[in-house]
Length: 216
Image (tube, rainbow, N blue to C red):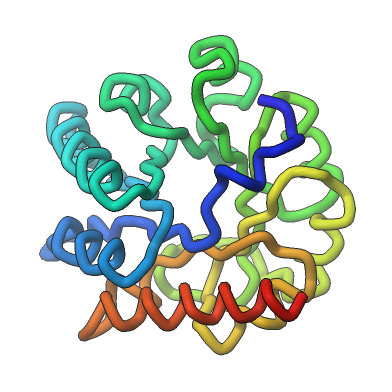
């Protein structure tokens, strides 16, 4: 998918499903959509294909009702099966070029990058947008490399022409600096899904994004 115009369809507030044992991802996702999340990324590592399909289909349906985009982590087959807007792949997933061979230009394809070289490579392979981080220290996902900070986000943002979505330890207070550094938007897990009030948390992030972009 060409870079030009992609920023018009890549959301600013990506909320990633928290499918940890004992958590109900759907309740938090519904609240996030009500709060203003414009993209939901379905990530449920370790789930069976059937369970993941049903979760993804439900999330895709709710996203459609709210005018939001549904993106599936890793699984391009599930993304196509449920009519999702896109798929996001990381370093250990299918390469971007392989995803493009399967999906053609019909899906947004997000790729993970943490430095300009990896970012340019992903874009050349067909990535529509980049998930860049971790920006800050986070306990939501284990085994992550060191945080790259605002400078790392800025380095990637100036290296590519596709939207950069910052991820990793982000809270609403961080949004102005991230947008100023060149991020198009942010992706969060715990900042919404692991709060007592996911709707309010999403609304605070969405409001911070709107204000930061107005001031940019």
